[in-house]
Every structure is written in C-alpha cells, then in structure tokens.
Length: 379
Image (cartoon, rainbow, N blue to C red; front, top):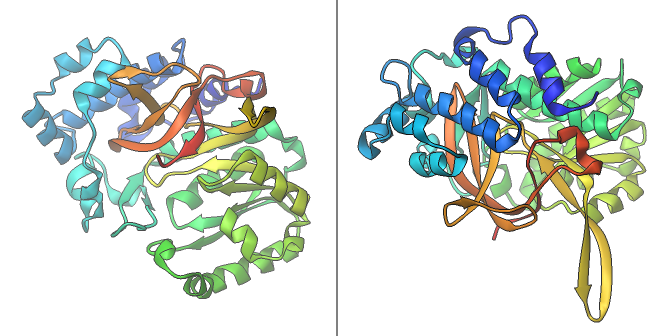
C-alpha cells in the first residue's frame, strides 16, 4: 500500500531510527502517526517538541528565554486542546537570529546536540545574509519518505531500480536527503552539489558564470545515461539543452512559481515526467501532484476547467498550518500559511506563503489524512 503514514511507520521501525536525541521522541512520533488526522497528530508531536525546547536542561537558548518572557510552561502546553491554541501560545519565532554567524548553534540548537552529527541547510540569502539551520539524519529520512511516497504514487518506481539519481542542489542536507531517497528507490546516488548563498542576488549573466561548473558537470553526467531521476530548479532546465534530459525517466523540479499549466508545457517540450517540489531551507520537502485538484474558473461568460498543484509536507517534522483570526481555516479556503518546523533539533514557527488548504483526494490518496496546500502566492 503506497500511503505516506504506512511508509513512514514502516521506515521508522528500522534499527537505529530512534538513535541519539531522537530516542526520547519515539512515543510521541508513533502517536502522531496513529492520530485520526494531521492536525491532531501535529498537536501531539508539537507538544513534545515544544516542551523539550523550553526545558532548562535540554532546550535551546531562544525557546528557554522565550518561555520565561512569555510565561510558556509545560502545563499550558499540555492544556492546549487544539493546534490553534498551541500555535497561539508559542507564537512566531525570530528566524532573523539564524542570519547571525553561529546563529543556529547559539540560539536554536538544543543543549545535547552536536553540529557534527547533523547536516547544514541554508536559505538562498535573497534578502540579506543567509539563514542556516542543521537537520538530523532522522528528519532527512522523514523527508525522503515524503518524496518516495509521492514519486511512487505518480510513477512506476520499479523502472527506476538500479538507475542513477542525480541530485543537483545545495550542499549537505539536500544531498543527504537524496542519498536516503536513492536508497528507498533502489537507485545509485550521484551528487552535483553547489553553494547557493547569494546566488539569487546575481544578475543573469553573473549567475550563468557562477553556475557554469555545475552545468558542465550536470551535462557530463546526463550524457553518461542511465539516469532515473534528475533534480533541478525550473531555471536550471532552461539553462541546459533539452535533449540532455531525453535519457532521463523523470525530473523532480522546484520553484514556487511553478503552475500546473507551466509544468505540463515543460513536460511536452522535454517529453519527460516532471514532479513538482515545494522546498524550504528549514522545513523539509513537500512533494507535489500536478493534477492534485480540479478547478473551475468563470470569466468573460466562459467556464474554464483546469487543475492545480497540491503539495503535501513532511508531516510531522514540517507542517503548513493555516489560520484566520486564530482559528484553522476550512478546506478550499485561502490564507497565509505558518510553516511549523518541529524537530528535536529545531523548532521554528514563521509566516510563509499564502495558499489554499486542501484535503487529500482520489488523485492524491497516498497522503490520506495529511492536509496539503495549493495555489501558492507571496500575497
């Protein structure tokens, strides 16, 4: 059965999954996966993560100080009856601290963790210094299961076995996540890593120059063939000759500007299956379905039928919470999301993109019980 929760339950039973500081989270993790819905599961999981981060003996400096100043206690966390009241109690976190040198280590890393046991993930630094966090192997495994489930729901994965997975993307956490994805799919991992810091601030000409070695390596590996999956931002696809991808089974693409129509147009042009991703430096991967929801548009005395991409997060370590006036919004309503990153190694709650809250449908039944989002926009 290709269901995210079942796949995650099976994977988390592997020997060593609850090693190190994750060991104490075995019970709340399994309770979250056994909940009747993702909001209930997230409430259970977030309570355990929040209490760990505000604890004087185990927690992170930011949340210990935040708990003192805002009177956040274990008792108040336990009394939260729903996700709305718990998120309201905790409030948004100050992610600007992650722009500082050693910001994660000094403010957000719990006391018993070590940087050398984790993998770095940084933002692109479009609006200033890049924000940097670190993820444990367990969190990256959860993200890999998210991608595995979505890929398996959209493509015959047996055709990918023993082929190569070419991961073009940031150093460290992104690459480790794709090593784990390759293992799940029975593929050979091939990395093409590069530093993304400040990349989006460059002019098109400067970006082309900076990315030249990456593009050359990408082209070389693609020409060798036997590529089952290649990863790329939509911008990268436009930088490389389309014929280079003719020997690739499918391409996993990222970028918030991707639309269902644009994705299908690119598929027709390249002649390959494209699977969209909604990525975030702190919250891990959210797999997308190009035809996740059917839509109807009325205008100019005409009715237009279309579809939207629906993304599903790496529950429970990443959750896209949506509320209006302090209450969860209904399905099919648009609101600003709060991205909750709830890991033993990291707790962040921040406002992100606007989106429509979606429930899993027949087309996306692999994520039954997990709330998704569609129609992403910055405002």
